[in-house]
Length: 157
Image (cartoon, rainbow, N blue to C red):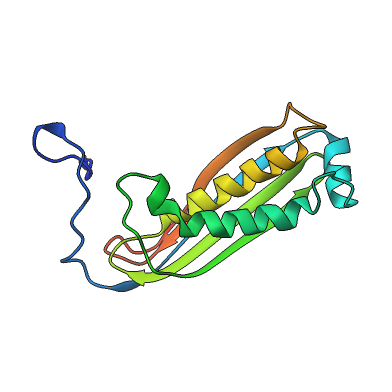
């Protein structure tokens, strides 16, 4: 069984030393879903949300969050991100699907950056719509794909 990499002697948390790893192209995609009332999705699609363009603001929030991941997750390495895309797709009748992809050339992967982007985009949808639908749920946050590094490519089935 694989061991956790973020614990040193005595079980103390530690940042993984990646200095001996080769620099490779790395990408990761993470997804999330925001489930809501049908009327809430209709307001979003019709541009009637009081706070403005829900999907546009959530996209921007996800991109910004990916760039700040190392500030949020204590043992993440700060990475020079090459690209971030955040796609928000209406899933009729009552949800928004989010897919965030992050790319870098470096010594460690960008799974946490992709997860952070998808999560913050979902939180932004919630924030912008909570005045009309406090019962929204954020669900299915997960990595769906990663490429690069020692472990190579992986896709969620």
